[in-house]
Length: 298
Ligand SMILES: C[S@@+](CC[C@H](N)C(=O)[O-])C[C@H]1O[C@@H](n2cnc3c(N)ncnc32)[C@H](O)[C@@H]1O
Image (tube, rainbow, N blue to C red; front, side, top):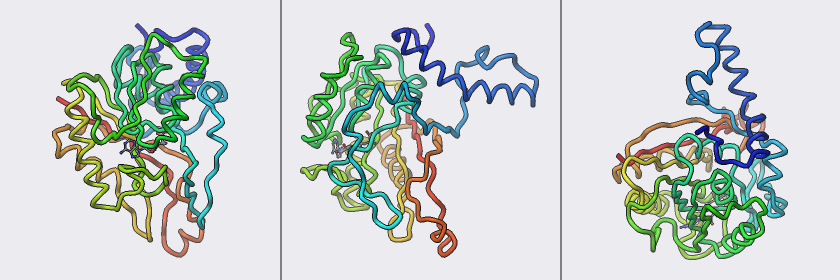
C-alpha cells in the first residue's frame, strides 16, 4: 500500500501535488548529474537526505489545520520573538506528515508527551491512533475543542488528549505504543501557561535536564521494541551563548537506553534574528534550522 493509501482522495491529491515538487526537481538534477535511475520512485518514494527544507505551508494544508488560535501574536524583545502566554506556536503540518510517513505506519499507536496544538490532528489525518499529553489546562481545553470541531476527523482512529504530565506518561500501559513523536518546549524560550510541571518555567540547565531524563525514561517504557521516537527541537541563544538543547536531549535519551538513529537538519525561516548588526558586531549567525532527532528502541 502506498504511503497515502488510506487518505481521502481529494486530500491525498492535494498532498501529492505539494509533495512531488521538491523531490522531483531534486531527482531531475540528480539524473542530469549522474544519469543513474529513471525515477526516484523506482527506488524509494522520498529522497532520504539528512538536510530537509520543509518550512512552508501550502494553502490546502494550512486550511486543513487552521484555527483562530493562530491569530495570537508574539511580543518582540529586541530582535527576538518572545511568545506571550496566550500564544500557541503551531507545529509545521508538512513536517509532521513527513515524519509520520517515514517512521510510522497506518493504524500505529502514537504517543506525544508534549502535545501542543496540532499534532493530534496531523496524526489523525495520517490515519494513526494518537494519545497526547498536555500539561496546560488552557491549551488542553482549546485543543480538545478543536478536535471535536474538526470536520476532517477520522473517527476510526483514536485521537485522545490527556491533561497531564508528559514527563511521566501516567496511566499508559508499558510497551503499548508503536511510535513517539513530539516537540518539547524549547526550555524557557516560549512561555506557556504556568502550572506545576510546566517545562517552560523550569530552570536551565538542571531542571530542564531532569525533565528530559524523566521523559526519556517514560517514553522508553511505553514504546514497544523496534520502534522509533522522533523529537523536533532547536537550540536557543541566551545572553550571547548558544544553549544546545538538541545535545541535551540526545544525551538524556542515550542515557536511558535509546539508540540514536538519525540527526536531521530542517531549514526554517529565521527564528532568532539578531539582525545584520548582530552578525557584524558579534559574529552571530541567524538561526535558520531545527533538528529532527530520531531514536530507536531496539
Ligand atoms: C513546543 S510546545 C508546543 C508548540 C509546538 N510548536 C507544537 O505544537 O508542537 C510544547 C507544549 O508542551 C507543553 N508542556 C510543557 N511542559 C509539559 C509537561 N510536563 N507535560 C506535558 N506538556 C507540557 C506546553 O504547555 C506546550 O503546549
